[in-house]
Image (spheres, rainbow over the protein chains, first blue to last red):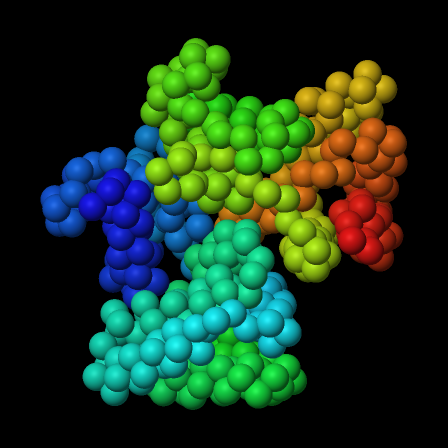
Length: 204
Length: 204
């Protein structure tokens, strides 16, 4: 396996764990124990910590190492939710205009697995598949660079994963988004997206 | 000088050079020659390349190394300009509600230096001071994490720096933003911001 793959796998795994709330806010993440746990060298762990710091999930404190970043607070939360909504709306509107070959196969596979993960209350899979659904929209809409702006938006928004009640709702909303894209119904797709990513942060 | 400082300096310097258009789009950036040029070890250069890839200024191509990323194209450009505008509007509105001690000293120092750089047509200083002005808004408005979302937005937008005619206009707009914040005039601040960061990308 090439180095870049290892780095990406470690990054994805750590991102998932942070989003899932497996660490406390402010908890230090150290290279050596993580490298031992993932059975990799320190290089990819260091890269992963740096990348997740850039995404705002971790923060680097001078002379104190890397820690799990604070969640966004107060008025920043709806601002960020709105920005994320705008970017995903753009992706959806581009996908409706021109859907790449194989897009719905990927989406439907994701939705089937998401449903199973919800039924099994497998939170680790839920986080990963939720992320994957939204990343598919961003990656497949034909605009390189969109994802690098979108990813840091998730950093401070890891709360809703702890609300188990939202899981099946979330799957339902994803299903509605995908169906509306397939029908070319932009209005319905955007209404479902709004429920999915703006509503959970409303009124905070 | 500690390691983190070296890494940040190399990152800032490289970011400035890419934004300034010192490299061609698609040009490869290699660790060893950069390390030699900056007279540092390869570690901080590698970190800088990784960070700028995350910010969308560079892109990592498997087995081909790191290259200068393409500029954003078509409809993505106004979408990104709008998102950047929304984030900076939020920062300005927070700054008007509560301005931290010493904020206007920093802003005024930046504006004096920006003016000199424009007069001297010192593009390297212009890029740095333009970035610094906007970063001051983001950093001082009291919301940690905002900057990590905002920074990648600059990635695909490095065109206007090559338009020399915009320089003095840009300084004027910054001055108007700062004055309006000082007077607590949100409407005027946001009008000046709109001219500064949305107008250059209009109609593309």
